[in-house]
Amino acid sequence: MVNNKSRSRIKSLRGTQNKENQSPKIIVAIDGPAGAGKSTVAKLVAKKLGFFYIDTGALYRALTLKAKRRKLNLNDEKLIIGLLKNTRIELAYKNNKLKVSLDKEDITQEIRKPYISYGVSDVAKIKGVRQIMTEIQRNLAQGNNCVLEGRDIGTIIFPNAKYKFYLDADFKERVLRRFKELKENNENIDLQAVEKDLATRDNIDSTRKIAPLKKAKDAIRVDTTNLSINEVVDKITSWIKP
Ligand code: CDP
Image 1 (cartoon, helix red, strand yellow):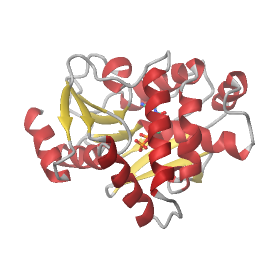
Image 2 (cartoon, helix red, strand yellow):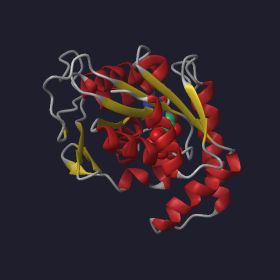
Image 3 (cartoon, rainbow, N blue to C red):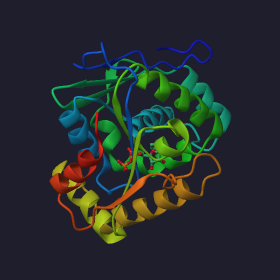
Image 4 (cartoon, protein in one colour):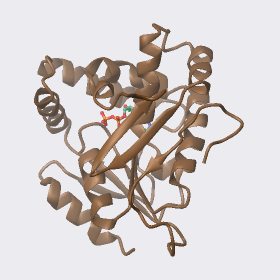
């Protein structure tokens, strides 16, 4: 699971899935912009199917947190890549809850904070970072049926995934959803700041040179603007025949 070339580590992805008798493994790729409902939907789809859930954004957020704590310039590619090579990020999924650890510290809540969102797209556009993250994500999924959510799962990480979905929603709706989510987490943030964050990240993520956010040609587009979470989950699972 751990790659020897880079020293970045994802040591474990714990869960309850029975690993036997499951060949070939099924990959469900869910991509899309922030606020389209990916995380909530991906978790529920994974639960319904008994698959592992992998939140790939958490990897980029964890690295961003470490870089910010060290007050590194997020655009200094060499420094950020060097940092990742000496970082251990763990994803554990238990009782329908994701736990993200950075060098053994539980950072699950911290990485959802707005100050991480504001820098994460800069870190995520670095070629060397994405190269290492690609390897990490493929290693994490190895041997397991998985639902992965992110920006480039269907295009770059698993271009041969059996099932690919691209979730989207109107910009205004995405902003509102993220605003509500942050308020529920007691974040002191206004709607304009959320709007600015999403617009900035949409722009950086979809225009970057490496693995830009886009719908894979063979992905099914789901517009979630007027759909409930359960409707989206049902729509997606209705396509999947494990
Ligand atoms: O939850 P939200 O959609 O706001 O973001 P996320 O999925 O946690 O991803 C945070 C950021 O990480 C994105 O804005 C991208 O810059 C980056 N990311 C990426 O480049 N590739 C991925 N597969 C996942 C996330």
